[in-house]
Image 1 (cartoon, rainbow, N blue to C red):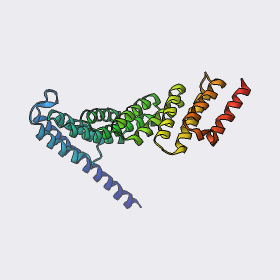
Image 2: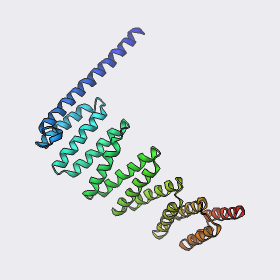
Image 3: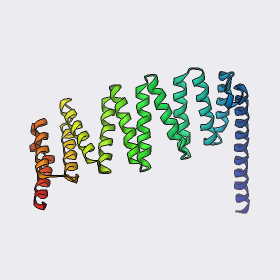
Image 4: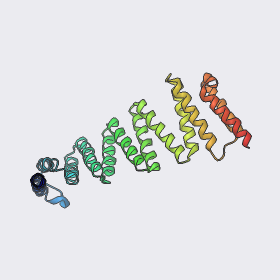
Length: 266
């Protein structure tokens, strides 16, 4: 048993030594890249050569799992790409750097994705820009930063819409509406749920989707501090005007019962 433990410890030492050696090689290539551009402060020189050295440094950082150094080197690659006029390459490298920052829960992931989104938007790569904004929304949501998440999802929905990716735009708008309701921004949620329901009806989408959106809008009416029975009835009437079959649905019955209970309490 003692011999086995010693062998295991020796293996760990060997792995650690190998990783340190890989990182030293990566650091060396990064220094060589800096020499090609006269240091990162002055930043002028042979950018193409610098990129080659930085990519080589990344090839050593990656197997040693030095994700902070890997992402840092990639951000320097972005700077070179932008100096060379390669905006798409810069945007794609920002996305790659963001992935490595995410692995170590580094705030640089947000910075990289935000910059990538702006660059993709700049060159008309709207689908890629939308994915970046959507991922930013997901990250903020996971951290409980709902207001920030709403902002990112709104931007994603807008970009997807401009790109005519309507299903993805609808998905992000639905996230915005649900999160707005979650933080008691009921009027905002009501408007979005109502618009989503109308879109579903006009595009001949699933009737179930339209009914669900109307139900969510109605529930937000009930939760609103300004909720009135008369206003709820008016809202329900509006839903039925958009979707004539709505009043026979389960969702409509839920809202009717809710209106009745509200009237009993007031």
